[in-house]
Image 1 (tube, rainbow, N blue to C red):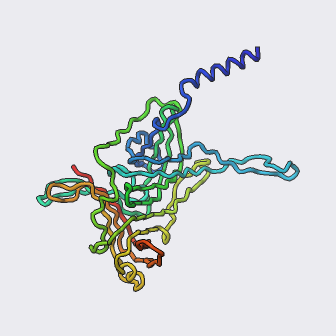
Image 2 (image 1 turned 30 degrees about the vertical axis):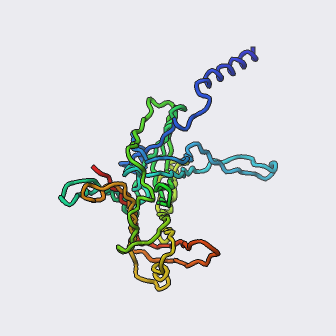
Length: 339
């Protein structure tokens, strides 16, 4: 009888699992919604993040424990004690439009109209500018074939903006969430509508990287990081989850490097002579209105920058190239969308 029951149990498991032999990547999707009330889950995170071409290592399935020993027992853990949970994960995004939630790393989102030379509206300008306190978002991970929806609640992020020759512009959001929730019997799953009628923003689209209006010659790449020094805060009411995510970074907030082929001594002299601060602007333009007004672009702006390093290398062969370290006092990102 026991063997029959055991066999029946095995057969039932096999039959149940016949419906899914393995979970598929194309059955998963990620979305978000900015929280109206911080650290409170949004029930309908229906906004796409952008194009997701790399893995996101979501951390909802964690259960950290600290091993504990005791005198008089064997030389091994005698018990395990549950620790607080920290929901950290990175989202590498290829931005398509202003849906990417840059405000959870920058601080603020504002929208302005773009008008052409005849004062006709030809687009909107979404400006992501910095604020000391960041808003929070609910990030949703939906794995349809597993009937799993999980939410990362109270999410803030640090951010790295990267653009390099031959590549699409990429923004990586290094996220930290306060809380986690899940549903393994959802009533329905989401179908995100991610547009594909235009190209992504690519490096070759840049229309002159400038400093104080002058051309920044032969730029081959840029990397700009906004590090918010996020820290999960805990107290007893939330048990093992955090009750808030705090921003702590001040002096080490920015890490900015511009890679350029060396054609003159402008940046070298700016570093050596400790020249006045400059503004740097990097537009990647996808489209313009009929009169030439830019209305489809992503623009990185670095304000009041000091050139920290612009060394001239000695090489055995080839053309000279250097990494110019830049120290801004403030930064912003603008995404222009045509109408």
